[in-house]
Length: 126
Image (cartoon, rainbow, N blue to C red; front, side):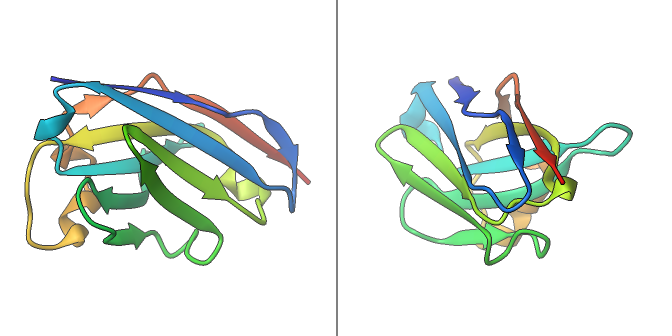
């Protein structure tokens, strides 16, 4: 089993940048993809970004494309968030998947991920 722990969330102003980190541990060699999802109050959890554990293939939600960047260094997956907007306010969750799919589009579904962190709060004020 893979365990993931997020950190880095805080309150910022619109236009600011913020970097979230997710440290994976345990059987990371079984991981095929990592992703970030977010959930705002009253909303369903939504896909933000994903990447294959091996390689550099990434995928982004349209709402964050060009502003957010997902990357991995060792067992840490980061989400660099630039030009933050109030609508980015949410709890951000890191997730790991052992499932292997031919296309990163499959990883837009939260059901493809078995391991989840506890979440980290990001609040963007206007």
